[in-house]
Image 1 (cartoon, helix red, strand yellow):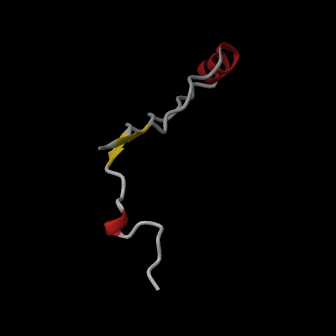
Image 2: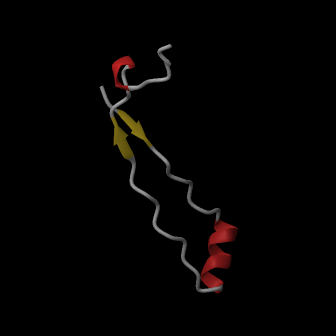
Image 3: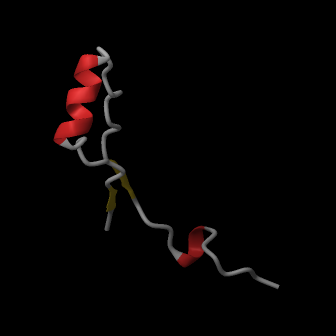
Length: 50
C-alpha cells in the first residue's frame, strides 16, 4: 500500500493575482505530490523495543 502526500496550495484569489501581475511577480511552481510507502512495525515504526 502506498500513500500520496499532496502538499499543494490553492491558487491566489483574483485581487492577489491582479496585484502580482501589476508588480510583475510570479509565484514559484508548486511541488509535485510525493508517493511514499508507509512504514510497518518491522521497519522502525513508532514502537520502541526495550
